[in-house]
Length: 330
Image (cartoon, rainbow, N blue to C red; front, top):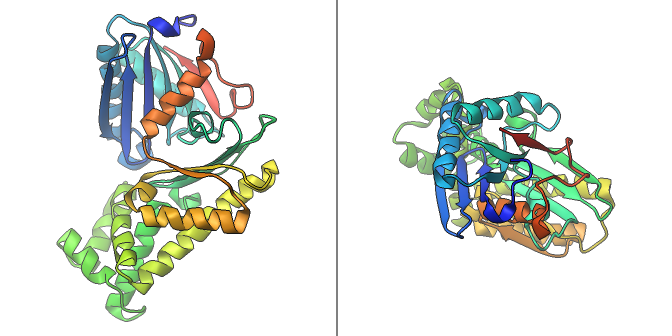
């Protein structure tokens, strides 16, 4: 497997975000198989994450058939500061599923640095999905990141943050502690229960992230309809996202005109919000090309193909090797 020929291998790109796991398999004959499953992040779905992970690996084995498997698994569950627990979990799941593969494993931001042509190894990736995260690289190969510490330590500007602020604003409006907002009716209609019941039900869940993230589109809808409270929430979210990009840019000393790739469900679900953030990146930080990337599994595949250029064995760039990405052989 270590020396598998990329031309005879099934290439697999796995985008394992906080809400969904998207798997793209490309067989040696060029045929493709795409699937979407729940999150394999234990912080998002608890014990169900391991069952889904087993299903993902078993499905890859079926899709590959007799061909060797080379892939990139980009997971929101991987902590670059302490990768061993997640690497062990992945290895155990692959072996239980009977999958023989050689995989690059990283968090879900890393592939953007090489999978988005506009960055081409120099620029910043901004993720705004269930959570938020920032990762950049410069021409010297220096890598810097910010955020990515789960929703209690970071993730400002992401869907969980937006949804939680929306829920709080609606409750405050209902009991008179805050200004009136359309969120009261939006959240009540969407959930089918009263706001107090909704808030208590989410708080009682052992893994509330997804329920909170599901409220973010309602905040975006209120903003588009002119609700001032929703506008204030998204203004704060945009400020946090620009702050994250600023921190990474400062550490890398990227020049004016640097490229930014934006990705994530909040941006793809609310293009006007992505446009607002892009405008602020240009105005406040001097960013140049700001590109929204919607096909994250395709982006992971692009990064994988970059590593396999000219038939090279699968390995990761020295700038991220065993710091931001690891090779897992099962």
